[in-house]
Image (cartoon, rainbow, N blue to C red):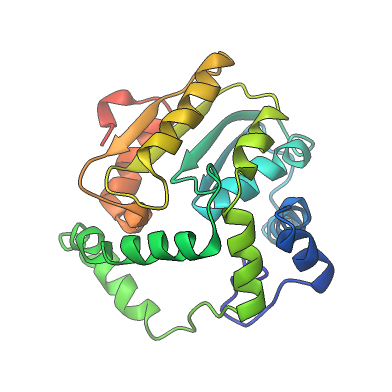
Amino acid sequence: TEIPGMSRFGHGIPKAVRTEMLHGRIDAWAELNLAYVAEALEVGDVRHPEYMQVLGYSTGCSLAVSALPLLGEWGPIEGLNLVEPVAITQRNIASLQAHNLADWGRMPTVLATNKSHDWVMAARRSQRREPSVRYSPVDLVAIGQVLSTQGLLEGLDAVELARCALARGARSSLCRLGDYDRLDTQLADRGVPGPTITVDGLGHQLWHSFPIVVQLTRAMLGDLTAAA
């Protein structure tokens, strides 16, 4: 689905929602995203799931945590899965951008893991001919403001969790080890079960690696022999 503010067609974040985000609050944006997801599910005739696994990557981790109370009304949630959560430490926008640029510099290493998968490489070449995501400057600032907070930690404290799996890249700058360990400890202190996974050699963009996605999905859902 298209995400307002991260859209290939220039769909921006509504002013009222953006104002909330500029104050570091993500709930209104999460609710808007859920409305988009609900439309997609209706078109696909997907209704009343028997259970759900909620997964977020990067910014999506914050959206997933914020959306948990409403998602719980759609069906039972078996587990939460957070890959490279960012909003787990306080930092300024300049630091966030510096960390983002450092991780972008590691993208070639990630993409190299796809070379033995011809269909993945073909899909990437095809994607280059499609519209890319367009951000407005004011939306970027709003998104950055949300990600520069510890909002994800606070959001987790407010929800009940049956299970939570965590994953990060060992070389990640956006999801740093100390912050990640603090998140892991917070969940452990609450007695929330679930694996804590570190992917060696890769940074924040690990979700762009097909073989890593396959291994992580298995490991996060409980097949620890597949852990990367």
